[in-house]
Image (cartoon, rainbow, N blue to C red; front, side, top):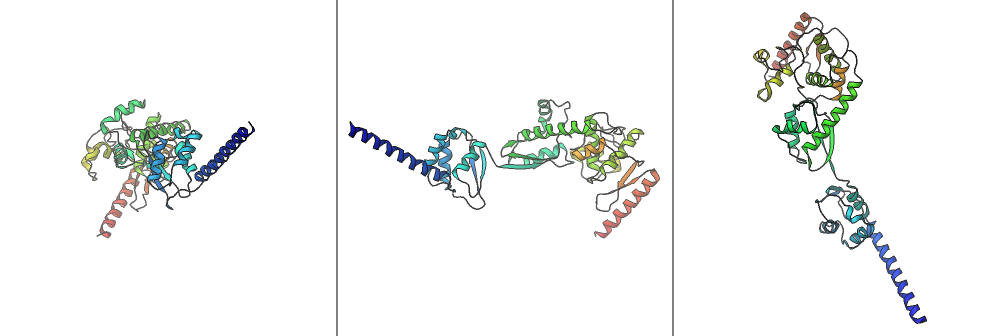
Length: 344
């Protein structure tokens, strides 16, 4: 009996020793840096992949030499079932343990897409579809149904998506990004509307979007947005037509060739603010938060007119009277002719 007991004890000790050695080797493997270039590498886990497939891919790509300990650790820890599909950036110095953390946390590589202030909805969809990391699902014909799915109160997409930079994993769809941009615009618009000033000329958040889109198209200068909003506020209060070129251009649509003529200004469309009073029926572009804020807090003053200075800095000359404005227009045209002659 003593001999049997001794043999059992020895067997147990050998097993414990083997387990200790195995644990040591496994942890040493898990904490030893994998083989990656200094600038890292991209690794893709396809949807539905098992951990055995992932570890085999790591071996095939030369990132780890052997996956025995990796599969053993993942199985024992229960993390084998928690890996998430996606595109990962593997950094130099990573270990099998940190890679497993990446894979189970879904720390995928993120890309960026920026909606630019002043884009219209055609510009937006075109830019989305030109980005190879975004899955194109939308067409121009899909806008009404898409807006309905968002419970949007309007059927025209213009102005509803906040200009901002968005971060997303590869193969995010255009619909997903647009949904995020729509929801963020609703949040920003609600915040700005709540804090609106008494002098704002608009009666609803949507009207704020409409006028802000015009301000956005008229100037890119932060210092001028409130002044231009002030001009439009006073013109609306006096029942003067806004007479702003960007609305006319928007009414022409995709057919506009870059040359705005007198005939265009005289041709009536729902967006021609030379032939119609008040605001156009929808926004004409995507306004940023600053333009929305300017419309809800227009600058005080007496100016009723503005025109570009032609100085090349995007600035405008503001005028109180029509005579002053006519003189400013004449000055602008003179400077424009001089610039053209100087460019020959």
